[in-house]
Amino acid sequence: TIKDKMDEITAMGKDATAKDKETFNALQLCNEAVARGIRFLPVDLRRSHASKFLPEEGGIRLPFASIGGLGSAAQNIMSARDSEDIFSIEDLKIAGKLSKAVIELLGKNHVLDGMSETNQLSIF
Image 1: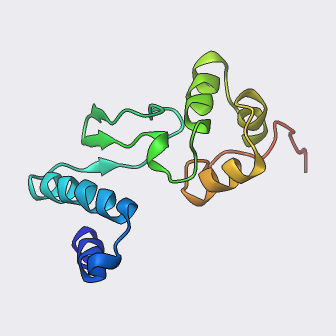
Image 2: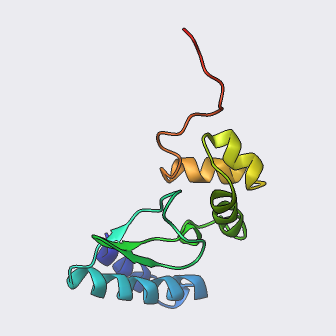
Image 3: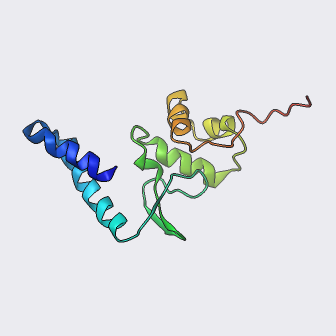
């Protein structure tokens, strides 16, 4: 996948944007890491840092900021997680002052997998 994306950017030639060129540089580093057996672990609500790649058993944990479009919400997520218990998506949204779009982005990237929408319990 990494090499395919690198080839795609190379094929753009002079039409490649500055962002494409930055992405290419990052992909070169990722390709080298993968070639050396380093694994990249997915963003995790409980373990990821806002902006730092953290080494851990089995690989390097991706930060919240690695999800394109999160912006400053990455720091809000980490602060909310570290300051109080988060039991549901609703808790995270309120504690982190997150927009619906950010919550959708986290869901799309499987960060919220296994979390309930609210703290409400159903007896049925």
